[in-house]
Length: 302
Image (cartoon, rainbow, N blue to C red):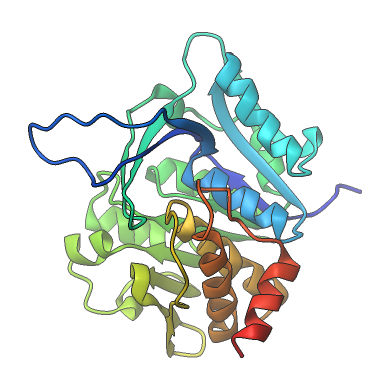
């Protein structure tokens, strides 16, 4: 019998060069800064590591260069307890592993530079789709219509749910995005999505289940279509070191709640606690919490 996985992340992997600065760059300026720190990143990959730390049976599908950085990034999944059998990684001999630049100021604000890479546009092979089909929740992003169709088919073949992180429009039309949204059981959207396509409310987005919009330090809004219910979850107040990866952590923790069968409001409160813990450490993955840490935080903030 094929092992069922709770969570499989697909795509969205890179290294991050983290640079700490007194203030974020302005126009025509030069800054002398301490040496940068290279850490593992990529928004879907961060969410996948968050799932492993929360105790979910986790897998990952992605692409890297067949270079030192690529093998390092693959090893970070193994270090989190994700087995080689559940790691659908492809190593490309001809391409370099992408590295993002993450700039942080003293207040924890950030700016991220993401160079384009052909590795972000690779096709899913049958072994990778088979891994996706084992997921209770498959977590990715709306790269294009064909990509989402493949993920939706693989996920539902295995009886799972598809969750999409829509942090940008990815050059999609409103028509294509509405089509993609309808394939998703859970959809995470940004201000850019709401503004670009003129959605007045989360319920206007045609996802089949939950639609959630994070609004930074204010918290997050959610809509449960099945119960026609709106939810607002304020962010917990904590000392912020680095917000990189906080949204990724929040999304995964929401999906943890969905797998457990929690109502949306419970899942969002749990996710807000997880994100509050994540921002108190440096790096996108540095503060990703364990399940017991989230539960303790919630007890302390009951």
